[in-house]
Image (cartoon, one colour):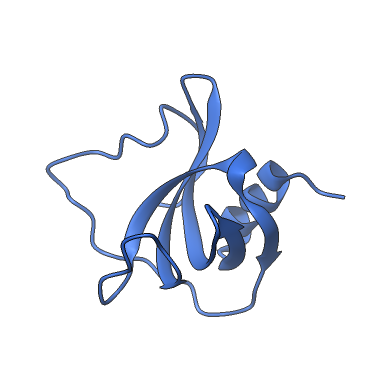
Length: 103
C-alpha cells in the first residue's frame, strides 16, 4: 500500500487532484509542493472544495498540511486547479522541496 508521501508525490508528478481527510474535514485539493520543514513532511495544496474550519473563499485557498495528518487519500481525474499566489511573499510551508509544480 503506498504511503501518504508516495500518493502526494504521484499526484504532483501527474498533476492529479486528490481528495483526503484532514483535521476532521473532507477536502478536495491540488498539491503543488511536497517536502519537509523542521523535519516534518508537509504539502502545500490549493484546496478548492470540501470542508475547512474557517470555510473556503471563492476560488479556494492555499493550505499547508502535515502529510501524516492526511487520511483516505485518493487521486482523481478531475481538472488541475491552481490559484493566485502572493508574489511578494514566498511560500513558507516547505523548506526542503522534494517535488513541486510552479504555482
